[in-house]
Amino acid sequence: MAAEHPPEELGEQDLVVATPELVTFDYQLAGPGSRFLAQVVDFPIQVLLLVIAVFAGIALGQLIQDQNLAVVAVVILAFVSVWGYYPISEAAWSGKTVGKFAFGLRVVGDQGEPIQVSQAVIRNLVRIVDFLPFFYGVGIITLFWNGRGKRLGDLAAGTVVVRERAPVRLGQLLSAAPPSRAGAARPAPAESALLRQLEPEFKRFVVAYAGRRPYLDPWRRQVLASRVETNLRRVLPELVSTAGPVAALERLADLAAEELPAPVAPIAENATHVPQHQNPPPGG
Image (cartoon, rainbow, N blue to C red; front, side, top):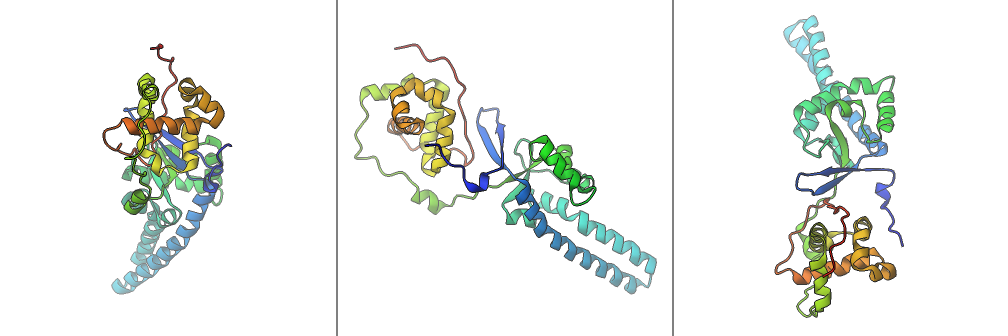
């Protein structure tokens, strides 16, 4: 039975970044709905900062008895508090504002790297254009037009808004630890030979999966197995036909866990390295 997508991921896409080491990291792009809700949280904060800026400018004018300077101070402080809220917060808080933090969003570079100060400034300078003609009309059209969840500010700065994954705590890792295999039977020689017959890239994928699978939910296991179904059918065609690709991948992971002399270091929370399809190895 096909795996069901989690509700929070419906209507949203993934940003996939490949490193020089051929490891792929995927980030879930933030949808218009969550970005709008973040704006709803940030807007009252900007209004509060604006009110504080106005009172501060008036107090400064009364202090120095200069109305012209008071007006200039109000304008400058109002601009800094309203426009500067986003770039200052995003640059100082790893791409987050209060609203983004509340809904688990963050601004990152196109390659998934932390946002730089220059990128925060550029994306928020262009925000003025995105806001036209009213309430982000241009930005929303651009966001749907480019298909990557980017408004004009993101296109200019080379940034994208992604959804952060929930952190994994030590207690969760311990509770998800696989059961001891001390009493498990050793695999038959024919089964052990399966690992040696795997393509090198696919074998690395299986080993990485074996170390990470205690922390993967069923939906993610289904996704990973479907991506390498072609490889699985070459190795365990009968098991794939009768029980599905997940069962075949789990069997290979069991064999990999038996072969390893020590526990496999888990791969990153959002790492999904999918091997390229290659010709099957010559029969031994």
